[in-house]
Every structure is written in structure tokens, then in C-alpha cells.
Amino acid sequence: FRDFLKYSIPVMLNELIWGTGTSVNAAIIGHLGKSVVAANSVTQVTRQLAMIVTFGVANATAIILGKVLGEGKE
View (cartoon, helix red, strand yellow):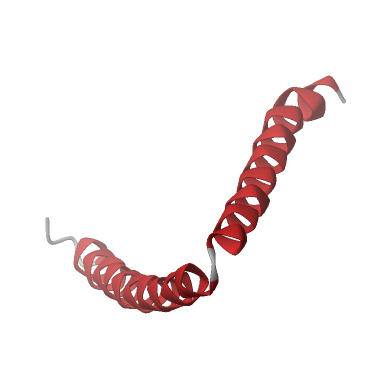
């Protein structure tokens, strides 16, 4: 149980702080006006699309690299 607490408490604190920061960020953007909210929405969609492409390339690279290393080719 001590090991569980030792490792879980920092993770829970991190998630709590991250969630609070996300909420504060949304509140601040919400108070800045309609144009800022709209710009933030467009930016977030663009960021998410870029992340999808980046994660896809990273996963494909990991598969190819794993196959080459599995064949014993270093």
C-alpha cells in the first residue's frame, strides 16, 4: 500500500493541477471575447490535425524500425 501511495499521489496531484490549469485557461479565453474564442477553436482544430499526422508518422516509423530490428538488421 505504501508503494501505491508513493507512486499514485504525485500522479494524482499532477492530474489535479493539469485539470485546474485547463479550466483556468478556458475561463480566461472565455472572458476575452467571441473573436478570441473563435480563433482558439480554429487553432485547436489545426493543432489536433497536426498531432494526428505526427502520431501517424511516428507509429509508422516505429513499426518499420521494429520490423528491421526484428530481422536482425542494425
